Amino acid sequence: MTGQLWSHRRVMLSIAVFSCITNLLMLTGSIFMMQVYDRVLTSGSVPTLIALSAIVAVLYIYYGFLEVVRARLMGRIGRNFEESLRGRVFDAVAMLALRKAPSTGGQPIQDMATIRQFLSGQGPFAYLDMPWVVIYLGVVFGLHPLLGIAGVVAAGLIFALALLTERATRRPVAAATTATIAASAMNEEARRNSEAMHALGMRAMLRDRWAREQQTALDASTEASDRGGIFGTASRVFRLMVQSGMLALGAWLALKHEISPGTIIASSIIMSRGLAPIEQAVANWQQFLSFRKAVTRLDQVLAAVQPVKEPMPLPPPKGLLEVENLTVVMQGNEKPILQNLNFTVKPGTGLGVIGPTGAGKSTLSRVLVGVIEPARGAVRLDGATLDQRSEADRGRYVGYLPQDVQLFDGTVAQNISRFAKEPDAKAVVAAAQLANVHNLIMRLPEGYDTMLGEQGARLSAGQRQRLALARALYGDPALIVMDEPNSNLDAEGEAALDAAIRAALQRGAALVIVAHRPSALQAVGDVLVLAEGKQAAYGRREDVLKQVTRPRSVSSPEGTQRVSATPTLAIPDIKA
Image (cartoon, rainbow, N blue to C red; front, top):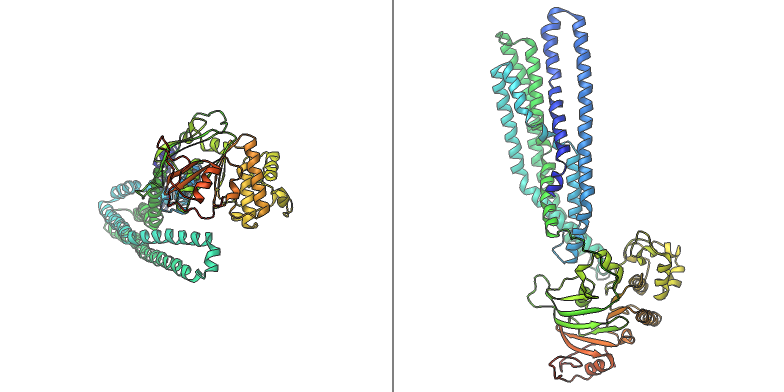
């Protein structure tokens, strides 16, 4: 992300040049006052006063023009920063959630907005103008050494106030940020699980947990604001005192005839302008700290999820699925969830996957569609591993119906077509008809253009599952993976599912179906039994189901576990 900011170095250089010119133009007022006091008033020349006023007006107009230009340039840098990074940030948040990494929630999105707002605001100008403090102090030294010494002391004290502000607010700002992230994660969790929270009477307890984090964030934020406010006010008061003190010191020097009356006013104006960047930096210190922390957090998120290089496009697969020595180990676990799985699903054939709870069935379905990467072994589609195809390319040829149906806030057609930019209307209707959900859709208020709401809130669980089935079938994918596809279906829905499975097999697709209820396995030819992440049995459906309903050990000459089952294997809900 630092490189992204560095890419704007030419624009930043232009802004720095404009800052130099604007700071030079800020001397206009002090020079004008010196000329008025030392020349116009002593000579009584009205033409001189008019000429000086005209010059000052032109310089101020030019100053205003440059201020507008540099403000717009900084605004464009902030905007371009967000436009160029938002895709990567979105992908990073999605990938971290996919990996079940510690939740960042929407914090990276907020951090991106924080960085943009700081870059587009007045904060950066304080730091761009900071080097001119030395130049202004040099000008004041040129007017009189005592005035310069007073200015240096004043600048040093204001800078010390800035450092004290940072030290005083560092801890509460960090605490507020941590508590805010935790509270946001709790709120999102409660929103996702609102039904269980309400039905089980958990709202008050969860609200109290969330309120405690919110209160912690609020207390820390108030503490940081109070401390920053004290030092900010002290800085402004001290600057006013310095301005009046410079007038007093200048008057004393004028009484001693060491400077002219015009120098009194000029030194006060120059010193005020010289201290302005320091005071502005103190005033924007909280925003700067938030900016700095946002940059650090966003760098960490983007470093955790590196951009994926787009692989070379491959021909469309025919649907040959090969699983070779597949082993899956989840982060934080030493014991493999899946271990040494080997099987093949040819085009036009189906494989049923059964096993007790916790055997790794859903994990296998996620590995087959590329959601989880194997620790060892490979999943190949027409000979190519899944990572040899881009995510978008893989998505065109793979249909997936997860156990936990996830629909998105959009129209029915958008959900079925997977939010394609140019969806094929005929393919959308064909998929819906294949899933036997077309008539249901037509009874919705706006048919295929009906907005579903978040998570398909307008539909029942069974309707959502059938709509997700249509989405899995959209575009005639070569490989279709279904995890508990009939868990929420009635008899009509199961009949539609069976018809859809048979139609997909007939056109040559490869199917993998994870199921507890045997009705989903009627059309498949082979069955794989998982037990404790291992391949307990694998063979023809009739033979394997007979084995698991009457457990006995069968060993093969090759030492494999084909058409075998362990005596202790227990698979609920499976009946021959």
